[in-house]
Length: 167
Image (cartoon, rainbow, N blue to C red; front, side, top):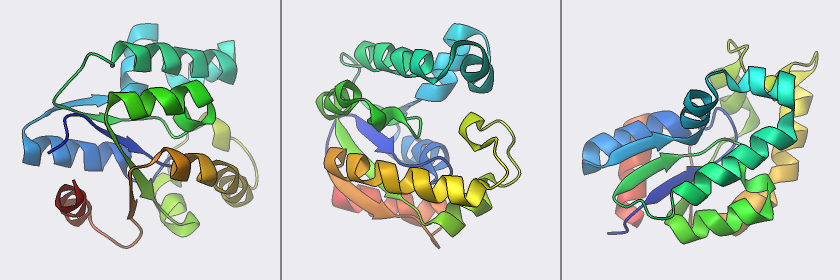
């Protein structure tokens, strides 16, 4: 079995909940990159975006990924945009096995519709925004992933079991 498992995918695809389930089943440490950056910065991602901008946040993601290179036996849930920087895609592959949790637009909307802390979705037509963002990121997720898992219509436990069966 592989050492580190990194979960990538669009916001609302299930990375955090699946990561926690994998951590429990496999008895491994769990890290959520967004949560760790919020702790380090002592503020929410929304506040980071609002005050310092997306580029600053993406740089913090890179720094945090670099700190994970020496980690082992860990399940790592990443932010939805972590694949936007080529350097991050390279780091993800160095750190461990990359699993792309692929979800369709309806699944994503259902998971995030009541969450107002998503800075990139502060728009009137968030369905269109999600569709466009998904389309622009898909190739980056696919090129980074070692394994692709369709999450739409599946429960957390079955997704985790599917991942384990493919490792």
